[in-house]
Length: 499
Image (cartoon, rainbow, N blue to C red):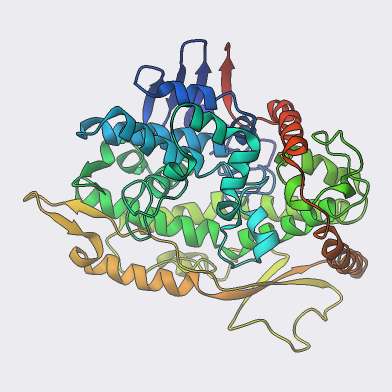
């Protein structure tokens, strides 16, 4: 990581995949799983046809982790597209299935199951779930609507053309190595975990757990090759949750981003490039979310209300938090990973000896306060200060893995059962993950007043906006087709297209 324009943004391409789409095949150059050619196995014609589908191609401009390079809180974690995860998961399935005694059709079904599972994501990925299910909800609105999206986009037609029924690949009622519940390893969990570990390496051991040699399929289960590899991956995954996905400043950024998107989509004068079919107030906000991030973000700059006030605040928060991470937190987390310890880092406190060395120097940006709470406060201590914006961050479920590995005698072992210190880390991480907070952003009174007034107005207008009718299949497909062209301009990937 290096400082770029004093922004602390990772811009080195060494962790970015690239792709080549030709008339005969599709080559994935993946920094995690290696090169993978789509086009040389039976059934690949299905994947190659899906490559041209509008719903699939829009994923190259959908941010998996919601925030932009200027608002991210960990350098290098933005510009992580759903496309990268989708095709990376396919590459992982092909790697794991190499030694399986299965038919070509069974191998194809495994690939299609992981491929289609992310196609229902809206712009900014899970933000589309939070807007309709609430923060801390099930985060599965994209799953609920997935089959409908596959039908409306034409993906289901492509599957049937190749004699694959959509219900064979859309969340079949089974748990296996492709999709299963935590804490087991599955394709989805392994790919996004290894991929982000590779993107923000705390130290050099990321290569141990972010490569195809780190995972193998044994008796229908994804297993790691050693205790050390399992420990490094599991500890890294724990940190992804508490230091990034659930970290209070990051969650604050997500809530502010949610406010901005709601401010745009409820508006009656919406000028999304993807929409050329009349005023936006004809369409349900859920359908408008099937534009791409860049199209909606562009609109944020055009509205003078919330966007012009909140976006600079988010940029300042992101920069301050990235600076703290680069200068202080990265070294502390590296110390945690390198040491055999049963003490887990509190995301809002300095770790171990760093606390004694640094003293009371805050890990948080200087204009933010984070207060642990048990529940949503209802007294005068919340929201009444004219010089601060208070945002409640509810408790979240823990996110973790507890891998199985092969010990030196060739036996499979569960990491937490084998390693008492890791078991202790799991329980501590759960407590930190389930902690609710108030995030308090200090600002002048006029700015606070402007934000509160706009948010209050948005709640009323959003309630009306969600009463709009959903798009017909014809209109939705037209919007998706327009979105594909827009996605090319906001693409987060390196793609060489000669098809």
